[in-house]
Image (cartoon, rainbow, N blue to C red; front, side, top):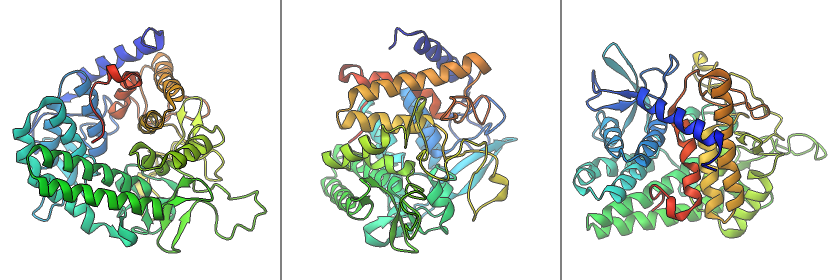
Length: 414
């Protein structure tokens, strides 16, 4: 694939973009950082899950220091109880502090940095902050059944994802959050082990395995063969419209949505569960798989659309209604999650095709428009929103590196 014109074109554009989005320390940000865009939308901003994925691409280029800068910036405003706000909108030398807790990627970021560099000292210094941040997740966002919940829908980064947008705040127990917390717990166990904190390591692993069991017990739907959001207002998993009195023709897949991908990415599914979910939904063109990657909502959902709109839903700021649509379009992070899920469960050819399509959709749009967008129309592959976007899109050219165990640029999971 690296011999293809699309790959080389995309690679060259990404390398050029990586030089444009470097930012020096300044204002309230004490360390250098990466802007998630070269354009005006989201300019001078850092967001936890965007910047985590961006630092992975720099790590693949040997710049592991970007991971350390990211972690140190994220912990600048941590409070004594562990609350770690996302920091965004650096304007006129200052910045705004988001009111929601950082998404669950910080321990994974630190674990990758430690594993690849062997540089224990800075990670050990951050360890108490990482432990407090993760404890805050597990307590402040505790939900029934030994699981956790998002506070607001767009805390997830999946902004107007359909279940979170139609339920009241705090009512959605989502598989993406819990799968990411499982990975965070395993990453913390790895870090604790490297620090010879055997009691901590054992406790993190124990908690991770309990969470794994609860995800499969309460968020896996055996009838449908996929993971789903648990609706705390009804006590039921959200996959179809209530009642199911439409003679099997309407609302059957209304809420089959992208959070279902994350337990596969995290390796939580059994082999049989993974087979059903991957073959039934991830690779099924009637659901997630489009010619251009992974849709953010099943094509068979009545909510499915590719509009430039929709962040977030009923219960949040009306000014956020013109961007970040997760009710249909293809997003590179979904391709990234699905790629690793496919590789975990032995769908190597499908993973290779997904890596190829991820590069293709970016190459097409850069050739046509001169830039990458935040997301792509799942039916046409065309750019949708946010001119000159960078963020996780810069992962596209290294997806192929994970297809061969000998070329993997860093270990992803612990």
